[in-house]
Amino acid sequence: MRDIIVAGNWKMNKDHLLTVDFCVSLALDLQKRRTDGLKVIVAAPYPFLDAARGAFGDSVGMVAAQDVSAHTEGAYTGEVSAYMLASLQIPYSIIGHSERRQYHHENGEEIRQKLIRLLENERIPILCIGETLKEREEGLTNKVLETQLQEALKDIALEDGRELYIAYEPVWAIGTGKTATADQAQEAHAFIRGWLKGGYGAEIAQNIHLLYGGSMKPQNIAELIAQPDIDGGLIGGASLIYEDFLAMIDTAIIQAKTE
Ligand code: PEP
Image (cartoon, protein in one colour):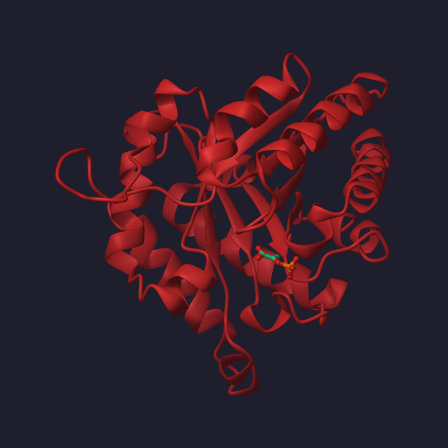
């Protein structure tokens, strides 16, 4: 049985005090709730990861980095390694986000190297994949997903699948207010799980958490996470607003109980 994941991607927003304030409040609110089967993750900016982790304390709130270096260590000014994340006990890192693919020209091999570095350090990659609007309109969605999966996971062995999350994030839905319909999202997630089954076998494919990302908000999360292959969300804009993030957690708690 997979958990329901509510993960916020804060991008380059908030400061130290706002981060601590948000995570302390969330820890208190989470402690008041039944959170079995639920994982809450906040991908805060690098400088605040340790503070966020400390603020979450023993609650079910966990912290993710928004990216990681493809290199192990050395003369890579400005980079942060997976080993450094491990030394701070940061359990997750997003990789392959479309903003990094687009603005930082990250390619499939670089993303694969990042994934390897994270697995070597027993960190869980949250691998983002997704098509542009043009690709969807040209009927290329599955082809794009397949290529991005092949590139990132080439020659990657998985133990049981729990060590990898994949976020399906259609680029046309990120930060645009346009959300994939529940049917469109489920179709893409089913394709991804089918591809994983072909490569890794049914058991491992069933254990990999698949998240939807793209303008998820309190008004649409219920329908999306009710889909059989959608195990939660990677949420950008709406994760910055405390009340919205908590409302989405509450919806996820209901979903976790009904599973
Ligand atoms: C994201 O950037 O991962 C994301 C899903 O953003 P938003 O929710 O704002 O579309």
